[in-house]
Length: 129
Image (tube, rainbow, N blue to C red; front, side, top):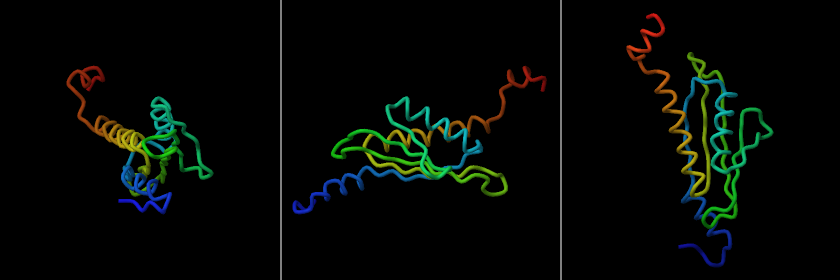
């Protein structure tokens, strides 16, 4: 239960309840991931803006639940490890934004799985292999 004497207590409780934090790895370059993220969130009604740092995007939206506005961010670190992958960190607060951010992480993971799958016989025949 929140303290009625603290007006921010409801906001803090809602932010804790709806917080989303996740990490993922992508073989795609950072610019490609950011372009995909921009399209993904804009299609869902959010604003996507670059931050002052070249490796971070902000995602902003209007009111959701008890929050007057919602925010999220994507932070990318390029060329990590031997495979030179892009390490991504996702943070969001908001009932719907957190779900959309989780959906975007799953979309990136499904794209990675599709890229790693074995080609079908039809694809092998078409490529001459």
